[in-house]
Amino acid sequence: MIKTIQATKLRAHFKDALGHVKESKQPLIITERGVPTSVLVDIDEFEDYLMMQDSEALKEIQQSAKEYREGKIHTLEDVFGDM
View (cartoon, rainbow, N blue to C red):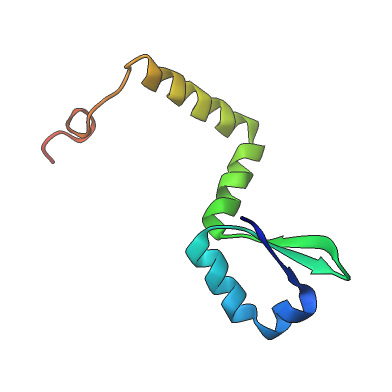
């Protein structure tokens, strides 16, 4: 479940809020006067979000998923040999 926190409480407990986001990988919604205004998210989740905004990256992900479903895969040995 996504949690919320008031901005004033966030200021007082910022380190704890960061710890929650890092450990749970869940976003933390920040409210001001009861209105959601911002979100604190884990960096990996944010990077995934940014990638999904890039249409070329999204096409590559979809193409890779299609090739995987079709069995067009390579083992680590195929790619790297006996290094």
